[in-house]
Image (cartoon, rainbow, N blue to C red; front, top):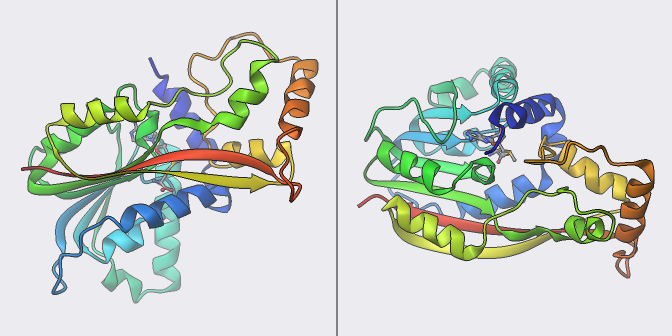
Length: 272
Ligand SMILES: C[S@@+](CC[C@H](N)C(=O)[O-])C[C@H]1O[C@@H](n2cnc3c(N)ncnc32)[C@H](O)[C@@H]1O
């Protein structure tokens, strides 16, 4: 079972540094939104949900095609930060307030949404659902909230992500240092369970590069994605940490950089 409070705490702690480190998340959200069908003729989605909205980076874009927005996040700290950022933007550029539709802020779990059934037209979620116990649960929950013809567009991580970390720890000790991600097959099973019809499913690898192991670790900690589920209570020793770093160093490429790979699934689902 995922310790949701611990996950929320980690993201909340990182709220202030999130945007500075969320490079993969920006690449992924841009890719994800390429799958969003254009309604044409300036038509808008009536009600849109950003599930696991984080610092709220997608809200501006979603606001451009929606009449009202629900920004949902498990982490109160992250949600409060997103709301504060939004208020600062409005203060700085008051004309934006007329351009962005109302935003309702919900501190809630994607696995149990405090929303009525059949009230949402578009639900978007970028790199949040890998933090759920069972992917089928938030998909079924989103499906319950969608109107007929409503869309669920999400990205998540697939097994193979962060393999360089797993590999570098493997000869050091047998403790869990990296979360387990679902295989493509397991994701497809969850899609089937949701009862939604699959309009697009795409898997891509995105490799990020860093100049030191410290930077690699900071890229995860800086966005709050450093909670490891069921982590062994035994602390890592200095010697183990040195061995891990030495293993990671062997992965330097011919540009002298250290890779960290992500395997991302992009899915577009429709409620029939
Ligand atoms: C990696 S961030 C992505 C944030 C944002 N979607 C973006 O593209 O920048 C993951 C977010 O999902 C949230 N989250 C994790 N588990 C969640 C859950 N069960 N329900 C709702 N939000 C969740 C975290 O608090 C965090 O803000």
